[in-house]
Length: 277
Length: 244
Ligand SMILES: Nc1ncnc2c1ncn2[C@@H]1O[C@H](COP(=O)(O)OP(=O)(O)O)[C@@H](O)[C@H]1O
Ligand SMILES: [Mg+2]
Image 1 (tube, rainbow over the protein chains, first blue to last red):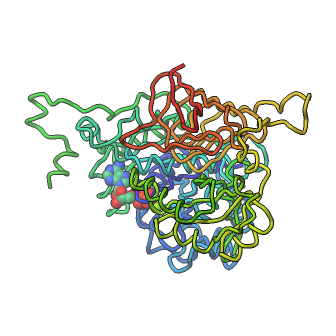
Image 2 (image 1 turned 180 degrees about the horizontal axis):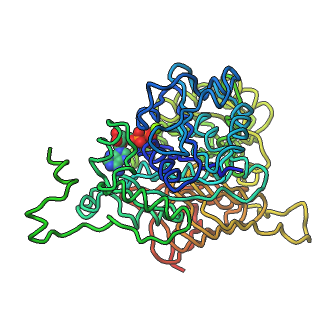
Image 3 (image 1 turned 30 degrees about the horizontal axis):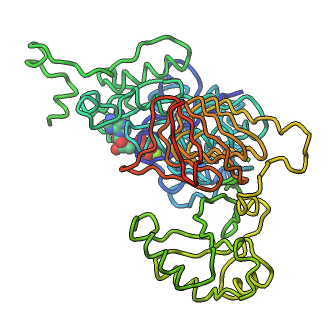
């Protein structure tokens, strides 16, 4: 039986799809058979970030409507063994999904996979609720700013009351906080909430902190999940996140603003060079 | 009761969904039916705090004029309120004739024993009238963070929250409320009309606090804020926040 993990946030544009791609790839790189399911019907972009948009034939809506089988719709990643993508439909709207249909698809995937990653659409409506309804575990993606934190709080409330586990009185969904696009420098300047502020408000176990990094955009333009770039701070941070999720202890990195020594001032880090371009 | 405000939206294809919800409204308790006297006093009140009343929905309370033999002119009353920028939504209390007249003026008749309990503060309002001699209902205890969008309601009892109440969350009790975390959202105690209800709080940063229908909103000029233990009470119809 697979573990179902929803990547959710409430607010849009905070890094859910980036995280789904990196996290799913990371699990597969460690040998776990993983499928990433794009629930963002109508706005699919997981396939772009995964670099397989040209290989999409059938999608989640087709499978839910039994117009195609799971096997026909899934795309096997060409770089990483054990990794599959189930894309969303670009042409349908999000009401095309039904609870029963999603349940049937997830059940079928559960028999073949170790992990099912559900990339949630933004919002708290039907689409987002369907993506989280059957989850065992949730990664709540939050940017260090008030509106994003507020929306994450809302999502945590829905996870705790409107999921299948909540409705059936099962053990609650395991909650993990992932703070993304974190810039210690901007925190120091008072332009962003600090990690401490975010944790104070949300009170959820911190799974990791992903720094703001140019390499994320480059990775998605190239169609390569950023976790595959071991020179990128964001990629390294995502690898830490996967390790922590699997139970390893790793200290949080990239959370402090580095004061630069002379050498560092002379030799810029790769990320900064990219940023300067 | 948790999350009454947003019942499941899954698998619904209707155009809308009717939901029950609680709101805090200002109540205009009338002592007279003299429309011009009412108008004059509203003008004075609004002059003092114009922002507060702007587009504020109000309920007209008829309890004190229920016995009045002359029927109130609800149509002019409603238009005067609107002219002052208030939005009259309905009436409460009063007799059958008054209700009929109010309905003809397009006002809702708000029902409820709860409302009546608040009407006559001179009568001692006890929460557990029907069950005199019986032990009061057990305190409702919630051991978790109350998140934005969630609502916790303790009907006929006290409420204890062992956790933080987030911005956008609401905790409501007919009795007292104790919060052993940070109150960032809203807390409404004594909602059945108990003016002696108290909100106890260890760290206050609230959006709104209310006791027996009286409320206070957080405002820049008068913030609802304290890092220390406070108790929030109603004294002479005003919300008081004191260290305790
Ligand atoms: N750690 C990061 N550093 C810099 N940019 C990021 C980071 N994470 C995400 N982004 C950028 O933010 C935008 C939104 O990311 P995306 O994953 O599509 O968000 P969502 O799926 O939540 O809408 C993209 O342009 C992406 O490149
Ligand atoms: Mg997305």
